[in-house]
Length: 452
Image (cartoon, rainbow, N blue to C red):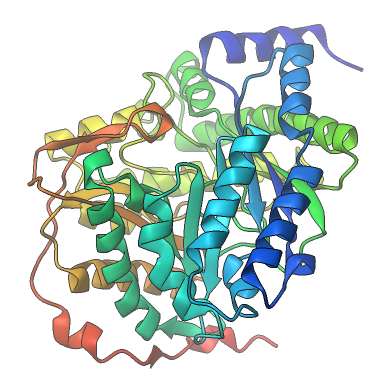
């Protein structure tokens, strides 16, 4: 039975507080498309995607109209393409990226993820070829997103892959420097990557997932901030309780949309990702939530503690509101996508070092950070290694999505537009890690991996 007050409150959240469904993502398995002939494999991939996702966008549009709930992105995630590439007798793996782009255009989705490789413990057939092709693949497509998982708590860190990815990130930026280095913004490097993540650029369809599934990512930083603003002075226990109740309401909207979409499309409902996903719009910022708690500006001393409480309260409230929770689930801190983070970075209050500390207690990691274009590849690799180590030791997902702003220096701006936003180029510690990164090999898994 629907409560009139709850309905009116939800309408207000949508109209005034930026509540939306950030993404409905259809995961599609391509394991049945594997073929030794890459052209035949691509034909199968295109047919499978366009068959499974034929009604994805129309169904989402009907749900938007029925409930008045904005669904900002309609997306597709597929089996890591490196698995398909392993069977092909060719190094021209970019054909798969072009096929994904063609399918994305045909289906009218915003992004398609899964141009990915999972190399946490080493390289299998197809992994090298796919990783080396990433810069070109992202430069010749608009909708394709790529990810590489380079480690896990169970396996340790593949430092050969870490070394490689520093160069790949730099090349992706260089090949798209005429488009504000957008290639690097569509590439994320993971530790402990989840198989059911609906958010880009890291979404891929894990091998343990159903043949086709619907995953939903919610939003709502503006709703949480507005609730705290109205509540006035209360102690931190009260703040945590208020965030829990608000996260419950936000997640119920996500659960409703997920069920409706899954039923209409005739595929299983997978998960709701609880992550608070910010946007560059004023009033839709995770940083502003932290400031509403009492910080002068995000990045000030106390930011990590406030974020830890926010992240925990969001999970506690959200997990009670959905039958299946997964993905990343927590609070995102992408710099260029969050109006408050952008302001804090411009003011110098928020630094990369502070962001790294914050990633130990929130979802994902160093996300959408512009760095100087002349940053050496080994420094990028070292940033990846540091962030992956946090994920490995803490048994959580961490990731790096940094954008070398080719031709730009600290303090200059890089503009992406849309949800990717804009932001300043941030200072990076360039004391050389070259010898450390050049050692390559593997960092062994921590002792807490022995949980069998």
